[in-house]
Length: 385
Image (spheres, rainbow, N blue to C red):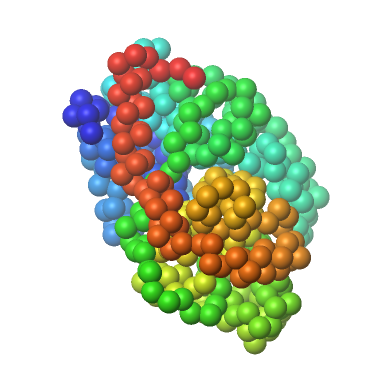
């Protein structure tokens, strides 16, 4: 890595830190690439052990972080957050790097201070998924809540459009998000796929057990129910479901004897279950989707949706040489059944080694190298896309 890049004084701005997730894995790599960085975030609810992984020189939080019990309602403070993200003073830094799914990109910078935004996605609830978000508001006073939400979304869109105008360069986390960014903001962007710690998910080349596996938090948009319903129609095929969440009780009710719900698993048992499976099944419409890449790192082929991030992170059977999975076109149990049957008929066309090799193209080292090169080139020749 360019030593001049690692010595840059970088102000890193991140939406918030409620828990460790995919966006925080990106943040961890930013701090590793730029060890002289200082971190700014609206909220920090991490415990000391989780916070230590960031290794940041300093973590600055907004005044909103001091509100009583704010961790229970911070997502409802959207418009207040737009004002508080602008109150961070990042003027002392050589460059500002924002990690944004909604708010961090709105930080204010000087005219000669480069601002690079790694955009996980335009805020879905404000743009293409706003109608779905409003439909999900149910319960008591739902109509009133929806009307209030509509007004807040309208106000947020105005701020959101304005905030993008001050960014010098935008990095998208996938081609799918690149298209979404252009659709919403009419801004061009460069794709750098997020980092996946594939070293923890080692290749297993031995014989596989006779089961399929899926893993996710059990929430509706992950579509685990569709996978379970598909396997209820294939009683001769075993499915192992890893994860816990609000849909667990429902899945227990509809599961047949060939479906095993093992609940939340620590990392090592989860890896073992993925390593020994015939294939990993994934039905969610994701911006990127880390788990399918981790499964391929284990040498496990992936049966997944042909849209969103998995259309870029899984090479389909019939599409090119060395397939790493099978695509299906619609989030419907019929499509999943057909894809599973197609996989089994062509199982000899999949190579555990090829799955692993493809997954390596999404690793941490690749991400660090591409990010450092992007920043170095911008500092030397100017930013702008």
